[in-house]
Image (cartoon, rainbow, N blue to C red; front, side, top):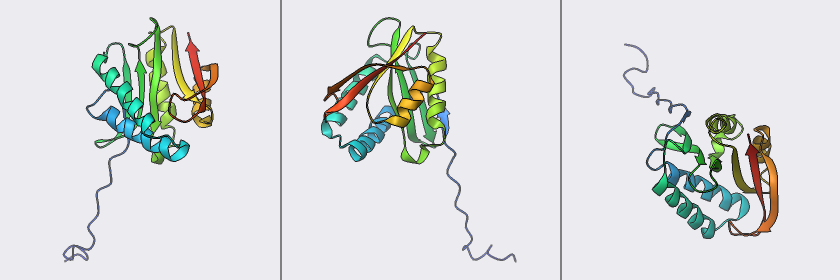
Amino acid sequence: MGQGAASGSSKVRPRPPAARLVAELRPGALSASAALQTAYYAREHSFDLHFEAGRLADMAEFLARYDPQRDGVWLIVQGDAVLGTLVIDAGGGTPGWAQLRWFILADALRGQGWGRRLMQEAMAFCRPRFAGVYLTTFAGLDPARHLYEAFGFRLTQEQRGTTWGPELVEQRFEWRR
């Protein structure tokens, strides 16, 4: 009789599935994104319920008009868990333009290249479809800004504002074909 086989003490836990990138909107994905964003921005930047309410309202509006032929959604998933998102929203603004929205990664995935992979997929989607893409953010998110600039986005506006709750230096970046 082999050692450990009968004792049950050597049970091996199955390894969790590897994280992977998928290009699809799944039920619950944007809710998971909102939870990731709310937790991160509350912890790191003191955002409050105003931010969460605004994020959820924006996502509800997007979901009501979502068109998979026009809009792009990329997720980082591990099993059923959504650990990252990036959305290209082409239905809410200027014709020929889209908005890059809801770009977030779980803390455990930061610094592993997942953000770059999400941006690569999104920009490959955008380049043949849109004359421009814009995003709104705020000063101080330097790793994200570096990534945006690496993909050709340029800062076009900067002003103090309270869009997300606390007063910040709000920024608009644009990519143009």
